[in-house]
Picture 1: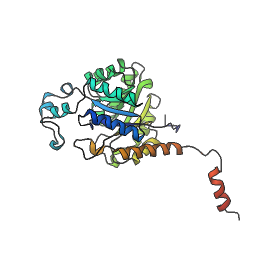
Picture 2: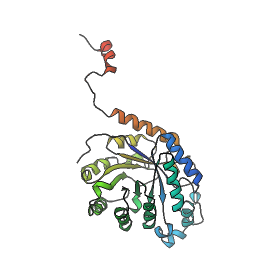
Picture 3: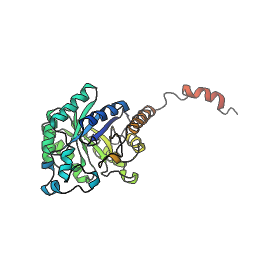
Picture 4: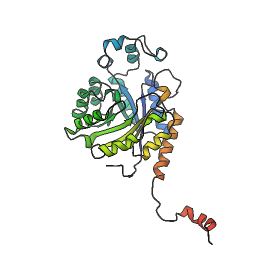
Length: 293
């Protein structure tokens, strides 16, 4: 089924991820900044690093030392990690200011922990969408929507994921898939927005929703993604692109996020048919300018 152009107001997620740099104060400030920009949804990331990484990966130095917060990649990741109680505190903070909290989960333990605090949705990153033990936890032991990105994922693997949720009749009711290209940042020629159309053609009748997760620079491509049918737009969010870390450079700053919200709102308003042949705004122009010969 192709997208039928019944446009709804877009849902925008500001993914803070690890851009809090290990600081709860900065995490809450970023939530406030996203709210001020007009965003409703906030997302972090949750890892159990010793479960997720091999011993070799854990103990190897960060591949980009200038971005590292520890002597090893494992120490770097632990520095950036919030535990279950800190995530609970962040969810409660979001609840208190009418924001919606969520997180990406990278492993089975993290999926179980985050499911226990009952957010309205949890996200599966592209890197882990083939972890079917984790997907089973989200499918069978979590009641919210499961959002999942398909960057660096083959068409065969996408079918396997959708079929897995269809085994218990939950793809249509609970599974959202994001078109996505994995890279930080991604050049325009690799964003591949027509993957949104492919998702509608292949899975429009089989999924709950379809979205777009972008790692590009600027906001123009998000508008295009929305017009192609993406119900959800997910973008990384930071206070300052120059902060230390891998994701900041491919993230939106507060002013950019505000622009994205305004552009998507205007686009949503514009995506309508004329209600009459000559709109009231055109009447004066018609009287002044229309050819009468």
